[in-house]
Image (cartoon, rainbow, N blue to C red; front, side, top):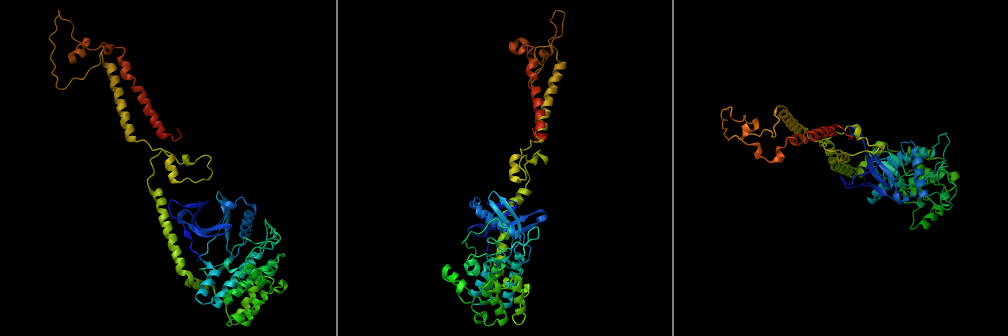
Length: 484
């Protein structure tokens, strides 16, 4: 299988809308295919393949229309032997389509692996794969519009490279990028060939009008090569290949693979008739003819046997890919889990305040919220400050209520200073000293005149109290009101 080239976990995580990209599976001239996952509530997780149009082609009308053609046509096909299109969308990075992710490999690479060992695919396994492919192709050919009218879809690129064989034992046809239908957005230019020359029908190579029988011929080449473990028309260059497609006699399968029955060889030869009127009219007719011919001697394996064959061929690589993805997720998730489980900075922001106006459905990460939320002031500090302020205000009020109209406020007496009793009063002596003078033994005339002025003292002592009390009230409002 083609192992996805996983991205570096953590900071380089990439997303396409609600899908997280894990790695790159393949890239071509028109699009790149990524392995991605969709997560949800309760640990929900689903892996998908995302095919994204190259950003630099977003302004090319022809490429965009081809891409949307593929998405629109394939999304309408609902068949177990066709790779499903789950969603089509557009992001700032370009158009994309979300496809079913199939764990397995292409038929082309399975054939190459077997050939590298000097082997063929077991005939019953090969027949199950090609029959599944034909039934999927017929399902695509039967695509209809909303009014029930058949769309005359032609795949035009039926080849082993576009057949996926899954570890579940199912073969699925994919890649409708060059398909033609009567309702498609774009049309092929005159003289323009689309598809692989080595798998083209003669009428396709000549640029004639096509119908589903062109795909039947291409499927005949695929079946011949799968059973013979050898290329049919491929030559050293495209010109020579095209010449073989048009003119070279097609070898009988029994000459290349003597173990096959003559009935099966005759069915494949019928599909490869260069005159389209001599071929099977549909892919379903071709598949049913193979089943009938194989029932005599060759046999067709059940899906369970195909699944076991795929596991034997690439099971170890699939498990390595799974382990790599699990490790990637384990390395990527701690930062996300830590952000979710770590205590958030104390804040008075309510749930309603977290909805950002004008942002639509944009998601906000925890890191983004931590930057928007202001830390909450300590309540213990506010309470202590308020007690000090209220104490100071109370002391000032008590002094104003009890003091005589003297120029000085009472001054605290040092603990170690002795107090000398005042002499007994006599009629000839001046009146007893004021409370301040008796308490301190200090005469008011000994202090500076500026501090002895009675009208200035209340302003000095009370002025700081009222504003600081108001400031404490404002701070309390700041804490309780997230919109202040």
